[in-house]
Length: 295
Image (cartoon, rainbow, N blue to C red; front, side):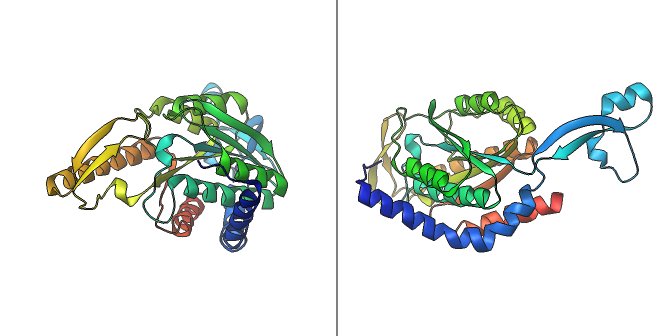
């Protein structure tokens, strides 16, 4: 990331604050509250089932032992903790449209952070590559959100490669209680650890946000180009004028997307897919609507 002088940084932070205000106030405010209200639940006791209780809270072991239905009773936490896990590996410094994938991640993170504090929730940030790069503990307040935005705009990671394992492992260690977690990444991992994703989704309310650029799927016919892997530095000479080459890339990326969607569906994890050249509001409306339908 290019180094910004203080005046330019202040302008950029302010611009993001203004750009996201409409989305937070008009689109996210009510939907965020209704979607995540009551998602933070603390266990209180096991008691016998009463008419009207949610059968999804059945305590199967107690029910089996006693021969009568028992449920787990929870109390709603008035305030939630929201954690943003943001992938800052080198592959996110790519974009052929109006912005880089990391720029999109910054704006999405800003919208979610402002929505959280508007709802009186705490918001924290974990930046990761193939290691934990930066952690900002969850707090409240506008100044805290502005600090998060500044870090997203200026932070330069030590690592270029990416791995989900350190990020999820760290989250599960520092957050013993259930938190709402947004994982922002392009998901260019050598292997996605399904067992760890599954464990994390059981402990926390995990929502994945996949960031993409159209040229990662559909290359323009631009003749011979040198294709460099941003994370490994490996270079390949590719003839983009060949329909065979372009179709092979399309097939590869389509299969990758299907695999990612299947993995999330199999483990009951929400997946929001965004692109650098498309407004993100529609995708989040769909997410909120699906969540409301399941409640």
